[in-house]
Structure formats: C-alpha cells, structure tokens
Figure 1 (cartoon, one colour):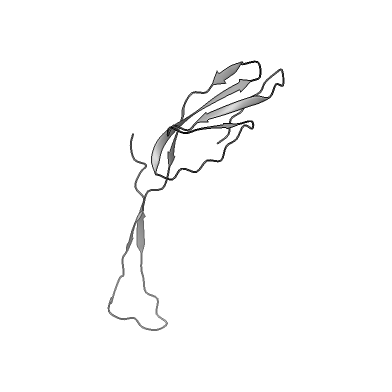
Figure 2: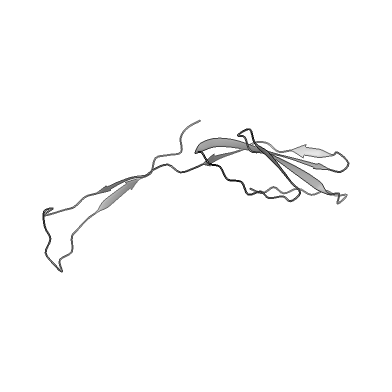
Length: 103
C-alpha cells in the first residue's frame, strides 16, 4: 500500500496505518508492506502527522485479502478407458472462480 502525502514545511512525517484488522503500523515513508494471514475484507485508514502535530486522515480504503478457490472441471471426450498413441485426446476444461465474498 502507498499514500501520497506532502508537507510543505518539509517536516518529517509519521504515517500510522490502521489496517482494519485491529493492527496498526507506523512508518516514516509513504509505503507499507504487510502480510495478511487470513482471507477477509478489510478497510485501511492512513493518518499522516508532522512534527508540528499537523495531521490528516484518509478515508477508508476497502480491500480484500486472500484468494478464493477456483472450481476446475475437465471434460474428456470420446473413449475414457484407453487412448491411442499419437492421437490427441480432446479435453476441454472449464474454470469458475467464485466472486469475492460480499460484506
């Protein structure tokens, strides 16, 4: 994640990342690497403050962490008991990936 923030007085800034999972992290750079270990929908909020206590808070940024398990179906056409060497076996397949879970 990253945030664009500019302090016109060029004071050092501190960014507090509220990651929506009960975890916060502080950085002095406008980017963050964070690992989420459980699939879920989250909302991240950034609060940027400088040494003079001037601050700004972002609106929440909703994101979904994790993957859904796709469904893969392989359809073998023709004889399914044996094959003939050198002959192609037509096997169309279909992949269905579920949508991101609703809130």
